[in-house]
Amino acid sequence: MLIGVPKEIKTHENRVALLPSGVTELLRHGHQVMVQKDAGLGSGFPDDLYKKAGATIIDSADDIWEKAEMIMKVKEPIEQEYHLMRDGQIIFTYFHFAASQELTEAVKLSGAIAIAYETVEKLDGSLPLLIPMSEVAGRMATQEGAKYLERPMGGRGVLLGGIPGVRPGNVMVLGGGIVGVNAARMAAGLGANVTIYDISLPKLRYLDEVLPANITTMFSSTANIRNDIANADLVIGAVLIPGAKAPKLVTRDMLSLMKPGAVLVDVAIDQGGCFETSKATTHEHPTYVVDNVVHYCVANMPGAVPYTSTIGLTNVTLPYAVQIANKGWVKAIRENRELEFGLNIANGKIVYRDVAEAFDLEWTPLTKFLSSLN
Ligand SMILES: NC(=O)c1ccc[n+]([C@@H]2O[C@H](COP(=O)([O-])OP(=O)(O)OC[C@H]3O[C@@H](n4cnc5c(N)ncnc54)[C@H](O)[C@@H]3O)[C@@H](O)[C@H]2O)c1
Image 1 (cartoon, rainbow, N blue to C red):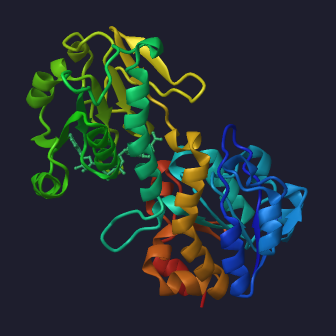
Image 2 (image 1 turned 90 degrees about the vertical axis):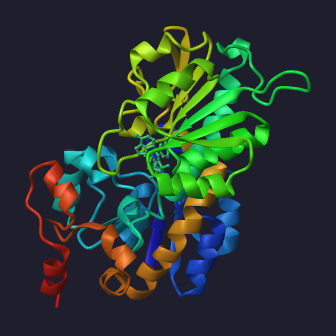
């Protein structure tokens, strides 16, 4: 199969969908790879490395879209790319269709085969192509929180780990999933006094067994959060109720209980945020202050560390890309349930219910769609 990797053109997107080592792997399976000039540069992978690995470097995105049987990307196609998508062309990337009717209609109209990273699903319900980005965001949440606690950054001037003779900072992590555990471990590693809150007691039992001694587990209730927040230096929001808006766990009136210069990092901002006073920010202007409390609410945290994020992402996407390239999309999804969940739109039909329901559009159940292909 001829695989094309265009350079990402969405603002501040420096990740790339394939590493030079991924090129080697696809070539080993008998495929060919075209990579757009400078596609990997933002993540620290210059064209030379792709050339050495056996890719053809192509100047224009249009040429890649025109020739490639499968396009591998990171972000959803943006408006400038809509006219480039072709009938029968496989596009393997993050789509987040439910966030854009325009994109959904454009992909339908193109007849392209949209396999979305974010809906590839393991049988246990986990989302393997989202996990590495949650790991990045969780670890970064502590790093950013520690930075904005510094006085020149607007914080209250607390060193999270303390020093001999001075108490460490107190960190509250709301949500004990992928983001929360990664944030808590980083904070514990710095020597902070960490409490992790969740509503799932089996999860808290498990975390209590495996996490270091300076992490305490707590049941997440409004009363417990309200009681503890007065002592917090850093609060990290990491909750998720799949498919729903994040619950507002920290309300505006709780801010007045907090120490001036304390920091809130709302990682759940992409689901609306779990603090009442959260609003999405960017890497250019990541923070703002409400009632003397610093808020950091960047919606695409992994974008700040493209080297790590690209490697983390491609580690998980490549095995699926190899299957699609080796078998073609129909056989690949028929033989792998995880990939089957990834198919959102194909041949002009929406085959993923949530996408159709988001805009009240018609959809075809996947089994019916697959049997129609025979
Ligand atoms: N801002 C970013 O750049 C960025 C990057 C990656 C992920 N995220 C977001 O971070 C959030 C967390 O992702 P994740 O991968 O850790 O999800 P996850 O499903 O692994 O974990 C969510 C946890 O929240 C817990 N929870 C639900 N309701 C709760 C409540 N009321 N109180 C306490 N805990 C509660 C769940 O039990 C679960 O353990 C998601 O909204 C995700 O989209 C944001």
